[in-house]
Length: 260
Image (cartoon, rainbow, N blue to C red; front, side):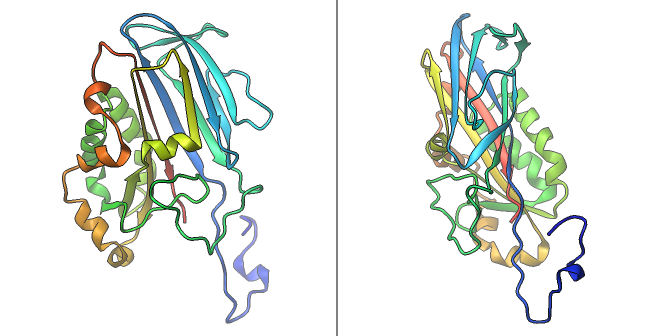
């Protein structure tokens, strides 16, 4: 429905069915940290599947015509900062955002949710079997604990939570889950040279839940009471190696608010 038109202007009659479909989903603020025990030159190639395209990147580098492939060439520094070779910019991380290509791959209202071990930005979903549901006032503490066991350092956890907090606070309850890293990698592959010793990629999906719909999420509410350590196996990360400062480590975090 267009923003400048009311429902009444569409000649909808009693008994008609209406299908609501959200606009393109934005995969927001994925940031990539590179931590190396010594200064090295690194190539970071990012490739997206056709269902989505890059909308914003920083530092700015050339992309292909479909905005689905790019390469950053950087110099790592022992303090965790990076120097991008083309521009000379000194940055803390590499940044990208992407939007779904609904014009090319329209979302089907009748489609079934994808299996938990797959990730497609257009059909991203949450359900009672793969998520947790908690009141919004408990989200920040839960997220900090979960992100810590997944290997995010203090600055990354703080940035993650404060970035998503304004969107989270609009709701009464939040359903959230973390995407298995292998599934996420198939949708947004990273090719880094020289090869890192450990790569940790954390992608969160979340949606608002109103109190009236809590009855549809009994398992997710119970799962929220369990130890957050179960997410380590779901995502498939190695937090011990991710925290080993003697290794060349890559850390990425990002997320999507699912609107339907």
